[in-house]
Length: 281
Image 1 (cartoon, rainbow, N blue to C red):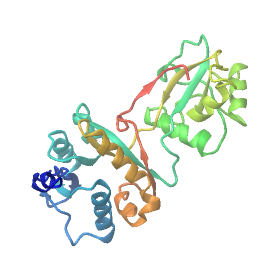
Image 2: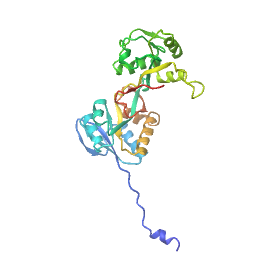
Image 3: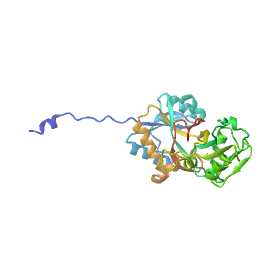
């Protein structure tokens, strides 16, 4: 008899999770619906993976271009879209980037740092036009990547005056301190390495100042609305960053919007907008 109340109690229905609606660009725009069975194997593998991992239905919604997809995203008609800067700007207040794709020939979107001697009033890129600069090396991390980042800001290879190639980040800092260059350009990891001491509170670059720092702008990014539940956003990021290893067929299709895709990378909210800052590190 003790079990009778349980048998008579009504079943508690679980509220189904809302479908994830993904914007797709097509010359045949149409309403949201389940992925077509005629899609290539990579697309089917991708949508199947998302459905399984998110435990929800996946719907695709076709739009004629990225601008239309962005407007639909901001209006709550879709939940996820791949946008470029032009499409993103009008909806930036309501949306945010969550993922980019790293191309094999490129490093990740690591920030570059431009430093000067403390007391130098040239604390922005415009003021440093024509200045002599020293780089920490000649490889991709120390030269190619910082130059690409600066070029996004309009500071292309001929923007500065004399360019000096040091043997290391430490050598570059020594040349800057000795007055052999007006400014030093490093990737953010190298800057922190030469400035942070053995103790977390020790800062070894008190005699230097950051004139500019920033990341290269993403050409395309996966964008969601700001009101997407945090659990869903984080699960989407987790699914994608491991996809190149766990589901390569799905990855090859999903990341094809970047040439020679290597992996998905989590990114900052404004990855599609040129931003820069000054700061102590």
